[in-house]
Length: 208
Image (cartoon, rainbow, N blue to C red):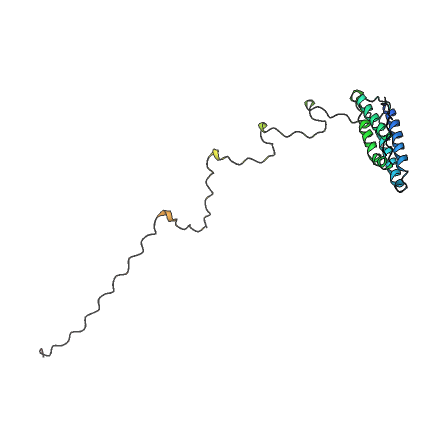
């Protein structure tokens, strides 16, 4: 058994109001078919109510605006497809997707009709300058550093860094550097001690 009914066609709506009426009728048909499944009645009712809200919001921007041919054809094709559904389970599936399809065709007015009523003004072109109240742009690098910027570090090409400050007067003398040469020779050793005094002369016995 097929889940569709062949031969049913919905004509393209000329205005947003006509598109809304066709979409709401198609939505009611889906909800009525889905409600035949008793266990899904609450779920189907909630889906149908949410779908009506989305469709009314999309078409309520300006119902009298004519639809572009491609948008009218999209709405007609979606409504025609729902009219051919004969299976309740498929009808429930379409309850969650059909409003989004129609909303896509109705949410954005045709380009020839101009911007939507109440839509915010477009952003000014970049060539027109910054927006009023926008913060001032950052200064260009060619204009030099900002007045409150810290002074740049000296470049290496500007020469060596200045000599370090002189040491404090009370600072200890630095240890001699190894590159300054060897340490001076140690002092000469002390001279040998004096020779001991000769022993006293022994008296000659013959002299007596």
